[in-house]
Amino acid sequence: MSRSFTIILLFSMILSLGHCTPVLFWNAEVTPRSVFPRIKYPEFHEEIKKILEDKMLVAFTYYKLSLKHFRCEDCFTYLSQQSPAFFYANVERADEALQSLDPVGDYSMPPDGRFEAPIVCEAGKLYMISLDSFRGEASPMRTCDKAIRSVTASIECEEIAYAFLGTHEESSELSGTLFQANMISFYFTQLALRDTDGLHEIEIQNMNVTGEDPRLRVELQTNDSRLALRFNLFLSNGYFEIHSFKYNDTIYYVSDLNAPQTHSFSCGKITLENEKKKLILSRIQIQYDSELHSERTVDFKFKDAWTCEGFVSPAIISGLFITAILLAILSVGISMLLSVQSPTAFETEGGPMLQINVVNE
Image 1 (tube, one colour):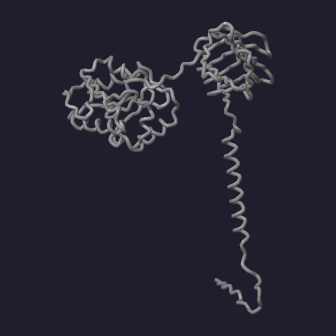
Image 2 (spheres, rainbow, N blue to C red; image 1 turned 90 degrees about the vertical axis):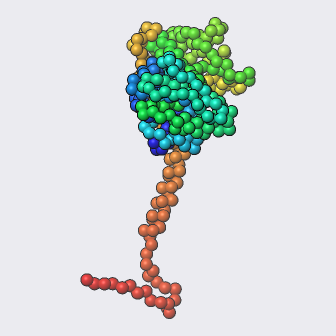
Image 3 (cartoon, rainbow, N blue to C red; image 1 turned 30 degrees about the horizontal axis):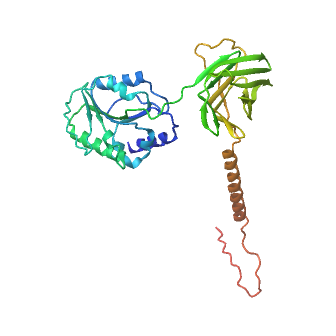
């Protein structure tokens, strides 16, 4: 389990913000899942029901438990030793799913860690124990780990499963919006303008596309009828490309926003600057499809993505440069070793003679 727990921590460190509640199971048989996709409320609800068919479940809850808490590997000396264990990183409304199953006991752990509430062993029963009293501790996760160890040691049940989860989502992932009109599909999760007054989110209401190949004019209308985000999409040599965006009479130029017409263009974040203003587009995906003419198709899926992260990025260039230096040093060293020869002359005639012993077989 120690190796699995380490892998869990590594995965949690590379996950981005905007997740649901993490849930750790042990002594429970649940469906193994990747840590990345979000587990919907009905799916998690069914997993809990399967556990309760032949086991009792004790769920430890902590307010706003997040992935950053699991980055402290030394905090979970007890939980890291449990096996079998399963980790769900993104569970939607996990505490509500438990509450909907009518727990027979909903207790709160006292600050001193002495839990004396009665636990009756019986398959199908669900107990919830809140650890929120430890939120003021200097190291709340270490205290929670000790409390969980104390409670589980006091429960003498054979068929029992445990879970550790949060009661509130720390943050919610932004839901994206898809606009489609006249051969253009445009998706993004957030559009915002940053100026001297701060960050202002721009709410898009509708998208209009006019013009014909090879130039299409796109207008994203905001809730303010006087403002709109506009850009031109050009078609050339099997590619589509965008050179600039215009918002509130300010033009923001962009480079390398292009993709083959057989693909869609995708980028995690685009930041466009003009003097003291910044136009920010998050998780953007654009596609040109000559066969699309309706407002929205059923079960729409974007084509394979042509990402904004080019092959020759600064990180790749740095890696190639360092590799070239190391190869140069290595080649010089190898050539120097190959050039080593035995001496053929001496500085003085009276010096020692070179003796080479040859054995003939």
